[in-house]
Amino acid sequence: MQYPWLQSITDSMAAALSQDRMPHALLLSGQTGVGKAALADYLARQLLCHELPADGVPCGHCPGCLQYAAGTHPDYFQVEPAEDATVIKVDQVRELAESLSLSSHHGGFKVALLMPADAMNVNAANSLLKTLEEPSDNTVLLLVSARPAQLPATIRSRCQLVRVAAPARDVALRWLTGQVP
Image (cartoon, rainbow, N blue to C red; front, side, top):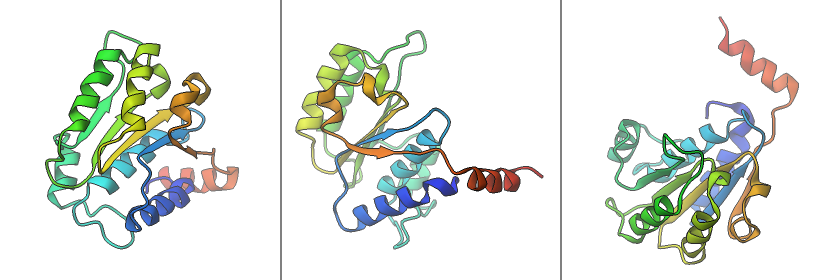
């Protein structure tokens, strides 16, 4: 994991995955810039890796990892506001729900990322509820939000909340020092 302050979260998700206790929906919340998008990316790679080692770090060389890195994984779906819009619209969520209802291409997980989830309009959020209430097997939804209170309570209640806290000053400084030559 790129950011050391996210290590405990990735470790707990790896443990949940190895024990077949992965939640079907995670709401990754925290301030802007704390690494929620990087965490969602890492979790997606964990879930889509075909040869995930015991330490939970995606292998990077199996077909799932290579397809994800190339942006062509058939079991990965990303929903975000369209280029010319500021909201996630109902048609985007309906298309996602249809894709998630199909069988996995590789027989593993199907992963959907909604970012920022709080950009869903009311109709999109209502459409997502059915998928959250009755997820298909081996489906994980990753909702990323800096403003989770903007999401309807019905959405929040169906997700496991993962709070991504800002790192302690000394941790952030130590990491930054390692990034700058």
